[in-house]
Image (cartoon, rainbow, N blue to C red):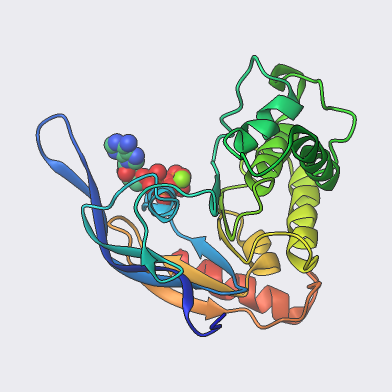
Length: 255
Ligand SMILES: Nc1ncnc2c1ncn2[C@@H]1O[C@H](COP(=O)(O)OP(=O)(O)OP(=O)(O)O)[C@@H](O)[C@H]1O
Ligand SMILES: [Mg+2]
């Protein structure tokens, strides 16, 4: 594996949405960025600047109006099981249990036996600390637990690239902290997927906690204002001077 080569690359990507009046809302304009191998990339920017759109393009869910997306050196045409997206609002199916919602991601995997699938789901239920909730339904879960189910569903396919869209939104500070720890554990535990992670978040502290590099976007259409490398050793101390300085630096770039 060539480590200097990007795992995923957006080159000159532009996208917009058609408005009812026939006009186009320009959301991304000539955006170029790369997700490197073994990198935890953070993306921050003002609300509505196009962050979720960028993740949907990276996941192959949206084809950009122009520009090229390459994944492992080949053009990305549509979704692939090698890239998982954890959506901003977890789209869990209300009539399926927690276990069934996670197993849904493995439904098309003919290479795994039913028993292997069951074991995999159990492994990831354990990772997100939901052991014992196998047969619960989404309505019985708190917001944080739903986010955890979504994280397990995104990971159970062993993706090379995990895209996290606001994993801490709508969570109270304590739940957010424990989910952040789980993501960090997943990242530091080298036996687990993925190779690289891209996380979009409003929570600057959490991004500085987790990312190797932060891309700061300006308001719509999304463009890169700055790139901040985070070279602090892990696990990072939120009370250290260096941590404060980095949080402050990112804050002042977006405000
Ligand atoms: N499917 C769609 N159709 C039309 N407009 C859309 C669609 N999805 C997003 N938009 C618009 O595109 C812009 C960017 O949306 P996007 O969800 O990518 O922003 P965001 O940075 O993720 O915002 P937030 O931080 O609030 O999650 C917004 O103005 C939004 O209204
Ligand atoms: Mg969004």
